[in-house]
Image (cartoon, rainbow, N blue to C red; front, side, top):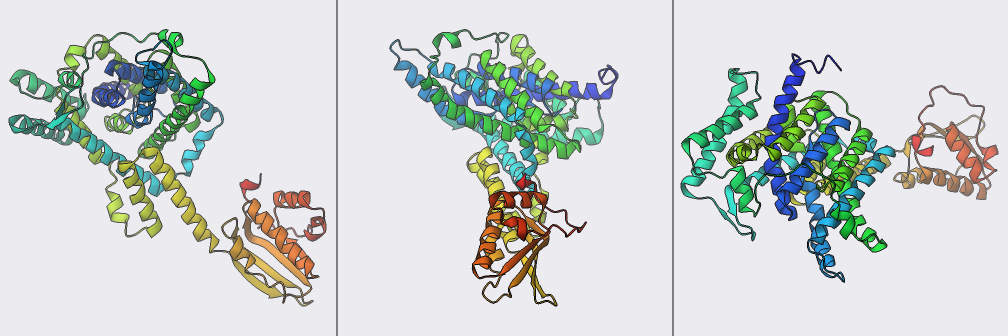
Length: 537
């Protein structure tokens, strides 16, 4: 640890410069998040600082950047609208009551995420199929690209928008192109290894704007167009008004719980998917359960200090990773730099052209999109290709969480359908006339019908053996199918012997009915049999 934080260590230098670059790219997205949600940008920036700092220190994935994210904002829009209406209906009306409901929801959301980590639910992200991951990456890249296009429009506090035109539009396009060119060519030219290409591009484009006095949208003018007052803020402190105005009642809990649960799910899915993506890029492995707890603790702290909800942010994380930010220091520096901007350097950050940040995000989109997916679409199973395209489309048109859940469900159904068709039976007859059914494949809820069709109860001899040597009894539905099958043989006056059942399966069957003590053969000891499922535990 001491070695890592030596000042001459290249890792810490990379983390510092990557953190500064990422903090610059964080500002416009967080501000846009605030306008979508209908809150003061400083509230969102405070939340980004708190969530980013705590998640970076205690999270399960060094290099992952967290902050106030748009995916969570979409979930909470209705909460603010309905909360404001409830506040005005109080006996003593309260203005902006939706904000206090928001803080309570963020605290409850964080509590749910901590419980998810304690219950070790983070490991389930490993069950997400690769086509879902590729669809997620592609869809999110498209979403980020489309979000940047909005920067080519002006807007006013009432919500009206109009596209840039004339010289202003051409200047914007030119500066975006300049930024992208610097980010693309600078590493190839090896001009400097001290600053990330993205940070260098932002500084160069800002200097071009300042010294040429170009008429372009800056961070400051962008905030003021939406009705904000600027970036200047104060250090986050406990919001005591929350406890003064928030009614502690069952009605409050039932109102905020659905929003908190959905926001917690969306936040964890985006955070864990981002964690998984960084794992693949860096060829290391993060701790999903630890990340859940850290994200939850960060949101609880943000709610208590008057900030908004947050989660892992794929765009900023990719900028950090591409800027060689690999350690926890990169996330810590990002959060601290963001706070410094708010407290002391607001005037300088407000001078940064939006075009520079858009150019950086465009390059991140190009690097994030899985271009190889076009090449492999015809080479992978059609079901996987469908999942990849479906997840991408749902991410773009609906929501990240819905896309991932839909992708997993589709993949699971396809797997179940294909597995259900793979139950095979080898039938032999012993010298004494006993008929042996050797079962091959997985016996589970989806394959029961196919499993039952393999037996000819009416025409079978009086003695039948069912051998599960090459089969996997996967769930309770399979056990029930075996129960029913044995009962049918007994009603026909025939004796059945069950061989090579797992210990778990045998114990469950004996608990269900004592008669299975005589039907399960214990004398068979074959070392090849070791395929029982964990689902029976």
